[in-house]
Image (cartoon, rainbow over all chains, first blue to last red; front, side):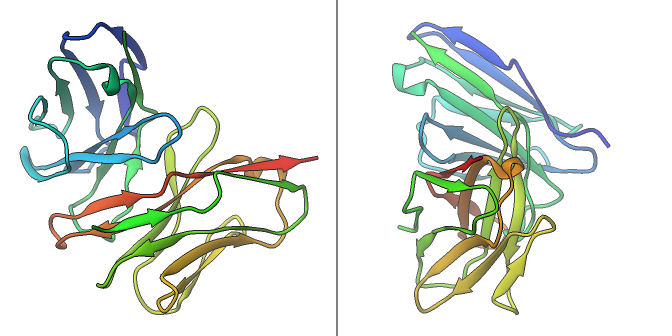
Length: 114
Length: 115
């Protein structure tokens, strides 16, 4: 059983640029959620995708957008990068959207914005 | 708004000593409660969860947590820690409807095991 994989693991961008982060969900999981984890803080919910539709969003501006593909892999896109976007971005998959389900996390993509 | 407070950012403890990591949440409705652990250079993984029923839940590696509704707490305990327990521990709570839930996370507690 393949776990959740994320790419790239590290990347550096400059302010104003755009970035795409990728996530392959665990086999059999149809739900993907994305989190932002700033240094010294807990993860913050960005959004969730279920069967290619966004079905939940946290308090993030529209320049944070996503996609989920038919194979349930996912992308997180961030436009017009700001310095405060520097963080670890975590992807998690689960076999459904219910709140009691365990989330399976990747190791994250660490974004540095200069 | 719902929030989760982990009162200690770091907890140093000697090996084989007991430990308690504290978690308090704010909510006026029923919630699901979770503890996730992040070992060095690894992703987050579920340690244990409370959904309903018995207020004491246990993990396979000796941790336990007790749901206390009156105190809105979900503290994590282990009677004897091992060097392999060195990690960061996150408490999390659900919010929202069953089909549109969000996990609200605490800031994490680093467990530091002293030999």
